[in-house]
Length: 150
Ligand SMILES: [Zn+2]
Image (tube, rainbow, N blue to C red; front, side, top):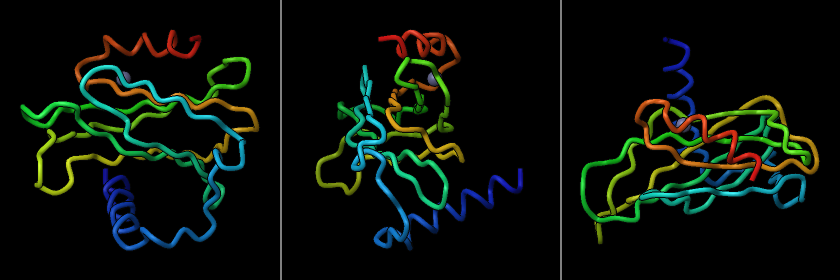
C-alpha cells in the first residue's frame, strides 16, 4: 500500500505546485492525434477533459460537476477507454472512488478533478471514451463494451 500513498502525495503536490508549469506536456487533441468523447448520463457531468502526453506518459484529466443541489457527495469512478479507429479497446483505465460534492452557490469549488495515466501513448487516430459510473458494485461494468461499439 505504501507506494500508492507516496504516488498520490506526489500527484497532489504536483497539482498544487505545478499547476502553471506545463513543461513538456503535449495536448494530443490539439495535435489531432486522438479525439475525445464524453459520456455522462445521470447526475454527473464531465465539465471538461483533456488528453496529453508528458514525459512518455499518457494522461487523461478532467473535471466532474454535479447537476443537482441536494444530497451528500456522490461516489463515482471515471472510466477511460482507448479505442483504435476500428473500435478495438487497447486500454481500459479507471480512477478510484471520487466524491463529487453537490452544487453550492458561493461556496468555493463544487467540481472534482479526475486523472488517469498510463505509459502507453495512443497512436494516431485513436478514440478516447470517457464515462462516469456511480460507485456501486459492478453491475454497470458490462455496459462499457457496448459503449465502445456505439
Ligand atoms: Zn465502472
